[in-house]
Image 1: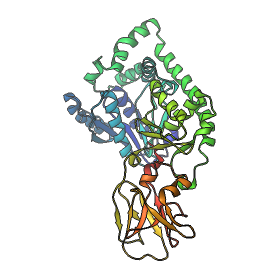
Image 2 (image 1 turned 120 degrees about the vertical axis):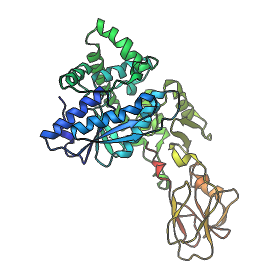
Image 3 (image 1 turned 135 degrees about the horizontal axis):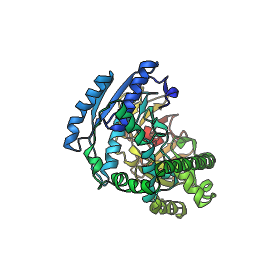
Image 4 (image 1 turned 180 degrees about the horizontal axis):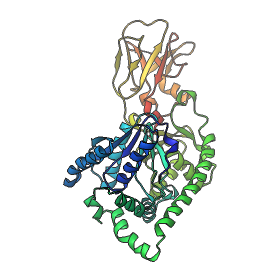
Length: 427
């Protein structure tokens, strides 16, 4: 009924086990497969959202099922953040918990089936989603350090129901599934039955349509990857670790290809904006050359500086302040919210500390004399958003070196800065 061969060499298998029909059938299939084949150790994960009183009884039910199959169960309690969509908030909490559990190479099996595929397509069509939103749920995708696998996607729900009855399985009926105030429940309970009365193959055809859209998206992703290859080049070596793209290269593409390339690039970094908010890209791209436009997205910001667009998230959205005393220059110094620094200097005397620009800083440069730091940063085309968080090394009140700019140091002092790890921005 399911194909598992590609994942037999994984360190461990997990199953997202809600106790409902789909995950109960999947657990039963995996357990019986393990009895006749050499498989990785299997553990069930039950996420307790605490959103309704009935849910308190579900861990005991899941425990009884797992005990009967000889499967270890792990119950994980999560806190669901309030928001406009309770369904989305619960999903976010659930998958965040899964990410915490999965180790390198581990597999998480989930029970989505063909009808889920069809419902997802229809739901997103009604929301006006683009091609990326309409494409099929993939059979597998990365999740944390492991991989999420959906082995039931080709199987209709009715076949799972028949299997459960044939094998005498017991499952939980979530009361909230009948609450048609939730959009997806309304589609499942009110809309799909009517569609299937008129078009009995509606679920199968919609799922096939989602697969076609997924194939089209794959082709567009190939185009985007090609367009981005050149746009990703050209950053100054000091800032090559930051995510950025050359604006002129992107601007030479048609508007549709610009959006396609950016959607592909941003997809792993943030939740994508809907069609109404893409005006933010036009404003960023078309702003005056000396402007500093910002496009604020769900999980970060796009900025423009020196002919490139830059992605900032996490610590990069906060402004580091203050001075940090460097008691042992032989060791790297961790900067709160700003990565770490290390120093290479033939002679270090007196008290050292690391600070940030306040304005009016002067640096003595061998052969050039006393120079204004602001002018020096302009000459070197340091991105404007880097300047306020660029670590400065002081000996007492004397500025000795500027991080990652070898020409800006006294007495051969060099300050090497490792920016915050989320400078790469992947979410």
